[in-house]
Image (cartoon, rainbow, N blue to C red; front, side):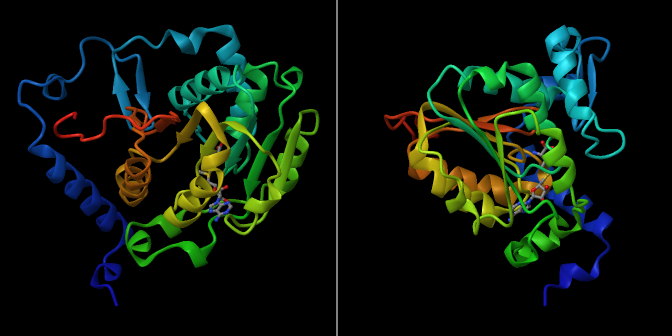
Length: 275
Ligand SMILES: C[S@@+](CC[C@H](N)C(=O)[O-])C[C@H]1O[C@@H](n2cnc3c(N)ncnc32)[C@H](O)[C@@H]1O
């Protein structure tokens, strides 16, 4: 029995954050921008990200329309993921120029996918968008004890299957209901240009990545939604191992997302020496 499970969740989450800060503290320079806060009025301050940097994308008409469509799926009250959805739309547009289909594992109400089909002329691309989810939340069989201690099993999702069917009724979308990895073989695409992984726990996410890896085309985009979030450090560690083993690198974004752009050739990969 893990003694940590006796502590209330809020305390455990606080400890996870303190541990994260402690681990990274020594690598943060005192003259770094981190200690200078921001350089002017905040342009963005939500979802774990505060900055005074340019956020004009939020005022672009096409983005605003896509974001509105995403928010209308109503994932939860007070949904404010503009910067993450900006990244989603950008990756999707880049990926749309490549051969292959779109796949998302972890859909909930379909906010990300809905923003994409609004942002792109998706139906005219000749691609399919596969959406895989239990539509009932995480599968408890796959949550490890270490993840439970971090409060991962506290994520609650409503049954969103009927809503998602309705949301995507006019789009080239195939909905696959059930737990990943059990359902992976139902995804019958041969090539993938955009793979979004957002299931909040290690086992199904790594299983999906392993299953789809060979199908992702060269230059294809893999978007890892939870990559940089403190509570999800086990996913990050697993993704880092996965990438390392394949000579790939992961772009860590201040939004918390991570991006792998699949390369055919192995990158120079000693992160310490650069050789
Ligand atoms: C954070 S939500 C996904 C949000 C989504 N990407 C969006 O656009 O808003 C996580 C989703 O992963 C799903 N999920 C978690 N574990 C799963 C598994 N093993 N198989 C299928 N879906 C899973 C949950 O049902 C939930 O809908």
